[in-house]
Image 1 (tube, helix red, strand yellow):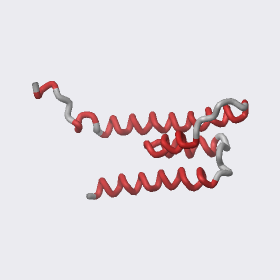
Image 2 (cartoon, helix red, strand yellow; image 1 turned 180 degrees about the horizontal axis):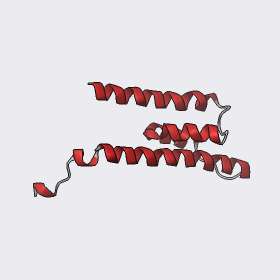
Image 3 (tube, helix red, strand yellow; image 1 turned 135 degrees about the vertical axis):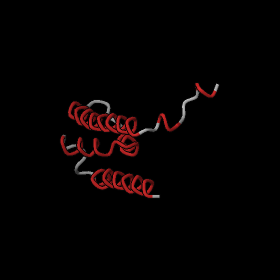
Length: 100
């Protein structure tokens, strides 16, 4: 019975974490592109909270890159300060967890 259980260390290994981060950042970049395109066409928009959620889930590099690549939400202080702040806090948290 114990041989069939999956250990957390098997799921949360470096390879899987890197794959996750690549995927979530691609999603963040895509969401910024998609929202910019929808804004131009006057269609339903991606909620701002969704963009912040993607950033908080590890997609900060992708959302920030998308924000400046597509010049989307760059005039909103909430995004120009908020997204980098989330990313910086996540980096500090990871460094702290690796040190202790």
